[in-house]
Image (cartoon, rainbow, N blue to C red; front, side, top):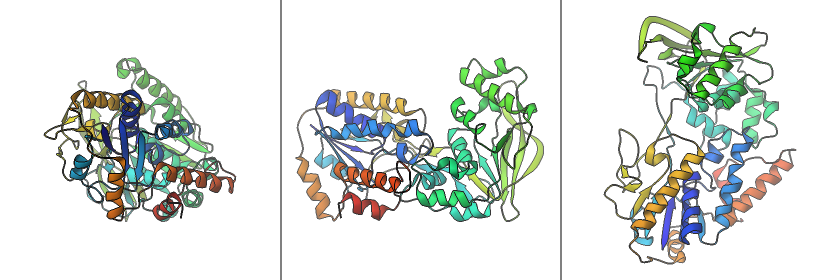
Length: 432
């Protein structure tokens, strides 16, 4: 049995690992990027060492001779869904949800209005990322719209002293831009209140530990009955405790982070440096409604962080409302021997462990439904790629990239420096 996995992030690698180790299935893992690991490499902030280290565990999957990595291969361009169906007994799609959601307000198309997804790609060294160094050199105050962990990560990277990021694997050009940044204040803006935020407490607390930066919270926004407001959630209760303590602090530093709860973005006028927000209130049933008051926040740059969404792939069905591939327990609707796992199956939710459970469940279903047969040898798909002029990167190529990034880091007194140029990654990966 031979299976193709599309997407080399955690979901895809967990699926490959389970197929190979539990069922002795041959697996080819494809990714449009020259390197594996998906959001573990290009979604997790550089200063979150423990989460980024998960890639070392994920890499072990490719040491199994039954599992092959084929990077720099775009499904829908280099290979079609039909190609995969012709060459493999089954296909598992795990390519995630990489697009951003828009606010849908006037002025959002301004050059100083950007998506958190794009900003995260930049500071993690994604090969296709835009460069935001110029924006940071022109922005003194930034509004980050969103009340989730990505918003917290973006806020922290924006305001944290560049010296605090020296020991991370952040790309050198990003580190240099952050060192030149003129950002003095970050406003964190959300339409709901602190009890409705989806921060994890560990991420939230990190904001209060940044040297030389005050965190400002309006005590009026903190629910008077914190136990009731938490609804029994220990995470919410801990978050409210953290923010309550911040609300008592005095402002003493030049740099600051200020939370603006119950503030719904209404319009951007970034030529004047303004984000207009509608003041919101919440009733006893949890329904939000505008109070009628409008406030203006000073902002030279706005980063929206209101979630990810998936995109369709030619040859596959796609639900344009929920932005996922329609499926039944992981089996793609209307396509034989085709499966889906991870964010493109269920939407952007959960943690890395959630994706592992999801991938394992998908693989078990695949094996249960498999009707037998082996469609092709390992060499056939490589020959097809070669005939089409595709320069694919295998796992030995990743090992060469890995070694070069460590060498580059050592030359600068760092453990690793991420390489961000696609052509450079391909050149190193091919051993050129």
